[in-house]
Image (tube, rainbow, N blue to C red; front, side, top):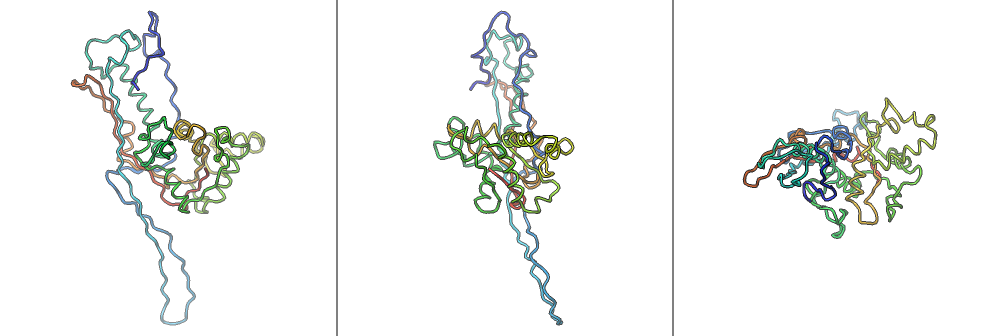
Length: 348
């Protein structure tokens, strides 16, 4: 796909002459990465994460002798590893990509070095928005073994699976943890539907699922001060519908603390980027791959690792005389982890 596609634009004597008068599609407002995750910086190579269990049972009856009984500490150490996954983004741009008569970007000289031009500034701005989406997509849906539906995977056949393969993300780890019996899962019945319509939540189904997710959670998670729900927009909308049906004055106010929607006193983060990714990329043409999802956890249990989080907002821009193109590039490191199974409870 070309950087600029003007197939649907008519060039006329009275066309738009200033970039400031163009209307750009509004970027989605995503939750801040740090709102959902603890950010671990300085990950420049494969690095060990060492996990220690709680101490084993103590308290044997005194035997009344001069030979005391020793207790076993029973501490079990396990490990995981940060991976220094490199992700690269590069957009080449040549001024010839624009129609010669297009006036919105101003008049051009014969030079190809347009590093500070309006179109390159616009391209860079849009690219930073796209990188924000990229970090969230890989953090949650990354899968180094990603495959298209035709090859037995979940990525739509029309989507390049390589856009998912840089990182093994949160959902892949959740699925593995559920299979291994390490993570508690509640089934959302609507997800088993065989059509898009059949996968829509029934009235009150989100509240039922959130109740199950909370009730099945380990008490250490329930009582953790940073515990939060991360839900798809579909779940959140259904939850609000239930509150309205029950009467907002009676029920809704109980769910709002300091202007933040909560459930059982725990903040709800609406991850609508998940809905976009699932509907656009995780479908087989008939149904989606678990379109309704809930995660109950704490940010420190699903950390994101990187060399420097500032990399997500940095761009290198330069002109290459050999190619006669201006390049806009970003290279960043990224990894994500689910650390301890008892500190996460899910529904999908």
